[in-house]
Length: 141
Image (cartoon, rainbow, N blue to C red; front, side):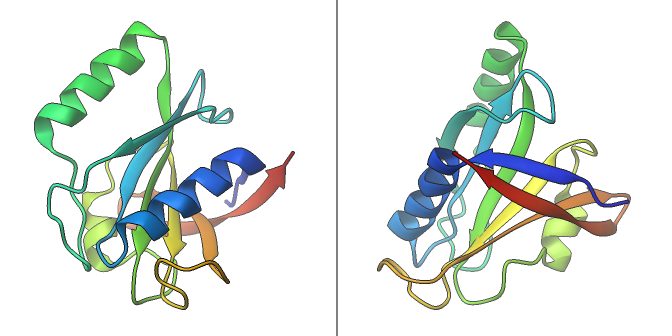
């Protein structure tokens, strides 16, 4: 069943800016929040793969992130990454590695403009046991 992701405009702008800055490599990160419905703290991560077709979090960075979120009573409300040459839709690899059943998996596509201003795609998905359901995205001020 589709859910709705409410993202503040500033968070969308940060997502897109990170995706453009890391292009042609995929960007990745997390937006933490007090619960899965309230993403609020933007946390850009380094793509340890340094790849235009794949992303991975550095294991030490990821451990620090989860400890920090635990200390702040936060959850990974959004796990995001960019696609640099394809639409903002989870790849087979993205689906296989999805391990947070309650998180929103947000994809940003920079395929049309790369590092430059212009059109972009932002979409959110719920991925559980290999099943992908697209969520509605509502941008709020």
